[in-house]
Length: 469
Image 1 (spheres, rainbow, N blue to C red):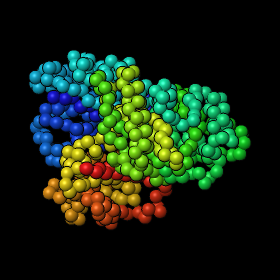
Image 2 (tube, rainbow, N blue to C red; image 1 turned 120 degrees about the horizontal axis):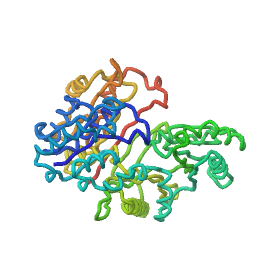
Image 3 (tube, rainbow, N blue to C red; image 1 turned 45 degrees about the horizontal axis):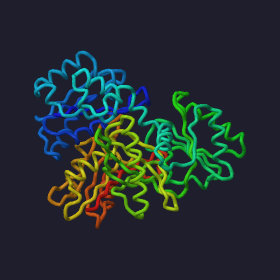
Image 4 (cartoon, rainbow, N blue to C red; image 1 turned 90 degrees about the vertical axis):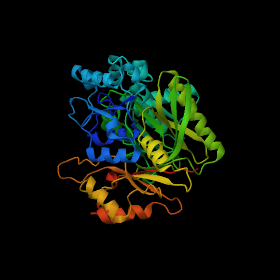
């Protein structure tokens, strides 16, 4: 058996909201005999739905709900894992399954020290890869964008010109230097901890550089001269540094670059690549990602793999164990520079590892592809049942015989009473015909607002995952 923990980044590092739906993607990884730990009672409709696709009997799983902490049932409180009453319940579940010796692995969505303490309390710390490192706060070390720049430099991996700043004064100096005559006329400011471009801001002197493809959710047009730089940092240092808790990364902006990544697994015995792909942005928000990587030359592909491998080995050397994604840019001259490492279970792992490869079997003949969408903000889906009914009525329910159709990949949980539900869903499709027609049919059913009524900053993109045999 394995113990799967549905947690997210520790709130002591970065504040999170309601993560009940996002963490229940854990069900896609479940196998018969596993024990799952969640922050809330599972969404029964989604649980039955997901297990029907994976073929895992519900009776073959044990689901434990951790005690509600400071965030209620919206997020797993790290302290809850070692609460005496919960440990007693977990030990009883282990005893019923055959004791400590029956546990083959502890798997967590986020590599938290609390998971290491939980495993140690159960006497199975050796089943949590990297437990000693994570017990000392290694999860923060491995996911800090400032640390990444130092580690990449040490590993000889190319990165963009930039600086790690630990004070307001350093940030002013670095911005002025990078915006100088030899720069691109724009820089990207990065929080040490955030994801999908939410913690990045693009600073431009020329508004024409405010392009979609950059992974920076926020945009700021700098006033001319040094006074504009100082005024910016007077306003934004607290935001960028988390009120002074974390260093801030300032990098040269690379216009015309393509965002790509190389994902790897780090184990005691070494590392190996698991996926390479492309990231695309709309309105400076992550829109979709395509795997495997396409439309690059063999030398570019080799450079991405080499840099990703060097980074995976560097992270493995200091103690990290598990999945990690090395993000990079392909510059207009086809050279590759790396921008960050996400040392955690990525948001795409359940798509390509479980849904695309195991359920849809995208590499089999005839070949299939998978795209994952967020429900757009222009749609109003009342609940999970209504969405499934619409799939049946439109002929879009996933069909194992044709290996096409829609698979809902996350529970549909309203964030407020009576509000439309927000969730994600996959479309498995024939690459010869694409997925636009299926998405349009769902849009006809659920779209209640014109796209122009939704501000671009509120645009919700989609994650596209396509495979070739």
